[in-house]
Length: 185
Image (tube, rainbow, N blue to C red; front, side, top):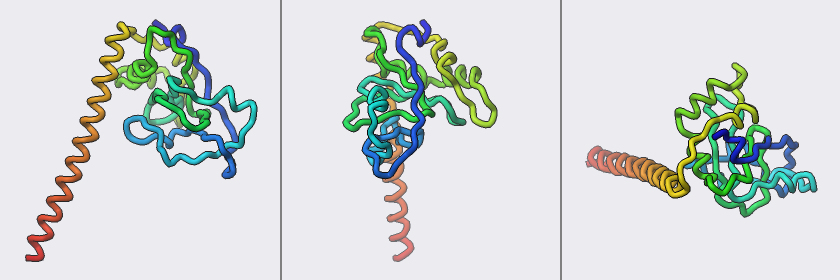
């Protein structure tokens, strides 16, 4: 099934930042590990009535549309601050009930899907995809149960990777302390 058949696709917006702003302006660098929005992000847009229709809501998906590092997708789990996506993103919303937004993000983030999108991207200095390219992406849709299981397994894999990294860091620190104590002895 084509992505455009299961969700609406729009572009992020291009606005001028203002340090006195109260609206959060999501950029590509505002994500930290595991596709989480950095909690230290600062508001940088002034409120206006035209921004309100662009506010991100729970279950929106933002897809990076430009860049050398692929076209990462992030499902918005919850938004407690008024936030809009910058023009480096495309926003997917109003996903049909038979598909979870988290599954769509997972599917877009698959290496095989990323390779396909890179193949269709335009530009050599800065590869980019547009709404047509993203909308024409074929996406396999299993049952809701399977979608939720896939997302749960992927979340567990991410958690395992995080814990493995933390454990490695702790082992390195422990070894350094042990070896430093041997030098002092």
